[in-house]
Length: 107
Image (tube, rainbow, N blue to C red; front, side, top):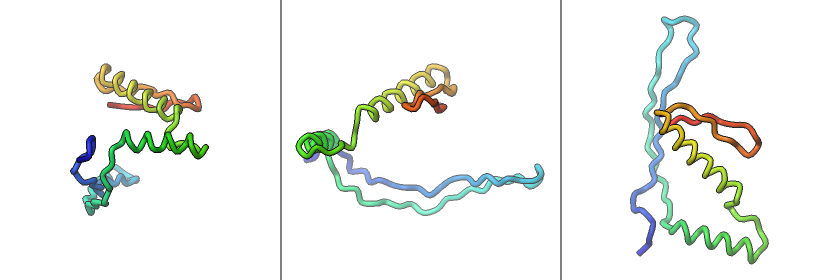
């Protein structure tokens, strides 16, 4: 038994809206796209185990781990921005980035 995994398959939906650049208002027309659904095989794995294996390999082999403190900081900043946006009824809030620039997030 795998703990922390889901039997639900991953699905990728090719769907969206094409926004043309009309010359006049009369030419304005949205085009909806509903394409294929792809379900790639993703082998089940326990995320914490994978993280620990990567961490141990980085120490033993002296290689760069897939995760980093910088990535963790970016995740925390994003989660905080989502909370701020929810508190402001979905208003856009800046998300500080490591380069000093900010991106906008709307919940």
